[in-house]
Image (cartoon, rainbow, N blue to C red):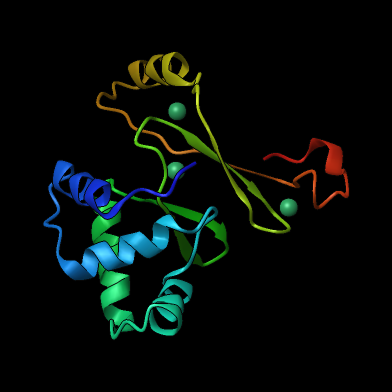
Length: 150
Ligand SMILES: [Zn+2]
Ligand SMILES: [Zn+2]
Ligand SMILES: [Zn+2]
């Protein structure tokens, strides 16, 4: 997957109602280079060490939360306690995460819609939304190189 350009990131923010400030673009640009996901701490360290950014840790936390609230990025829970963030595709998808190396695979083609609708209906719920994070052990961590992904 190609890393989005600065222009594409700017459009992405605007499409989700986030004003594309220089700092937000810098942050999401760095996040876009990460194939898996990162914690706020890790992203902050990279911005500081590799991009010579002067952004503060509190700003990184705040910006990531803002981007998540506007559905620009996803938050994952697999690192027990600390949220991880990832820039994913903007279509409905779920996450397959490796318990051992924390690789993240985006899975498309969700089949849960009708089941959830039935469930919600039975309990009188509408406007449902759902998240799913499937944890497992990837082929590489099992030493099964043949079946590891791209
Ligand atoms: Zn995602
Ligand atoms: Zn793994
Ligand atoms: Zn789904």
